[in-house]
Length: 76
Image (cartoon, rainbow, N blue to C red; front, side):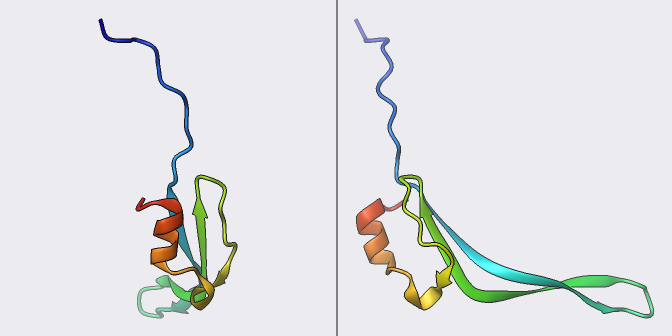
């Protein structure tokens, strides 16, 4: 007879990578009155994992390599 008991809860490694952007209103188009937002990357990135690991906003060049992150937190 199969067991109906649920297994234990566990925190999986789940990496999230965010790149920071700055936004400002773009120039006004005199003909239509439209104004589009302009976006640009700041060069900062944040890596966080469900296990509690977080880099904070750091320059992309200071991030651990993808190989190191995968080794420590799996391929998620």
